[in-house]
Image: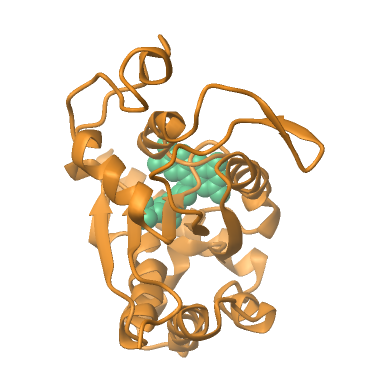
Length: 244
Ligand SMILES: Cc1cc2nc3c(=O)[nH]c(=O)nc-3n(C[C@H](O)[C@H](O)[C@H](O)COP(=O)(O)O)c2cc1C
């Protein structure tokens, strides 16, 4: 029997790829999806050649809804159009998503038609005929402590979803994300964070939604803010001392 999702595409835009902090949360989440039967294809923007949008609207006006540029979007764009679940994963970089992920999203403007329409009391574009209405999940982690470091990304991806006719299905957010890996390596009791990320994947795959308590468990404090600041400063000072 077909599940809730048929085709899921995940994009990890950390240049640290599978070794990064974003991957810790993302990979656990994908494990939950896969174990519940969802087919997921994972791509790293670092492996892809995706040129910036040229801004000439040729996709809308000359090439029938396809970008005129030949690069990795030539084959990835049709996969995204056919996906019913899109997972966007990014560390927070200068209060936003990474540049490569923004470049990729800019290129998806070819997935809407040029004409204007009113939808939800707002001028927007209709979807191209071959684009599925999908759900979008954001997976992010950041180096600072506070959850509000994710606010700009949440506003951005929510707005993107409204224009892309997609449903924002929620976000897995890991503040003070730099602490998680060392704590795991030291055997400290933080595996529950990864278990929660996996559980969020299972929930999404089986019910189409993720429970707020599960998402909160992904974001839970790993230590006090003062402790994190002290440990980070000691670690950074140590590296700088060695370079002297
Ligand atoms: C260029 C750059 C900009 C960053 N900007 C922010 C920022 O604005 N806020 C923040 O909390 N962390 C920021 N960070 C820290 C990263 O979000 C953090 O190191 C994260 O854990 C990296 O994830 P990754 O291992 O998946 O790449 C920045 C890191 C880099 C390299």
